[in-house]
Length: 64
Image (cartoon, rainbow, N blue to C red; front, top):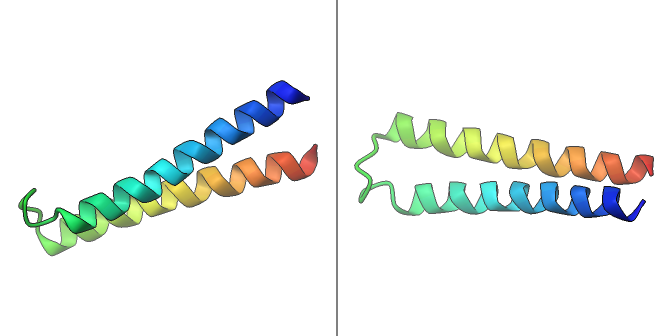
């Protein structure tokens, strides 16, 4: 039980990291020389990944 909660917490932390990476890409888009479409693609993908990881982690904990 404790190990499952630890794994869920680590997955949630990766999801939060994906949100942080999305914010960083959005903030640094001019330095990275990304076009608007590429920036939007990266940000959307990272937000989708973060949301999926957080939702999966929460659903896993609810199941426990």
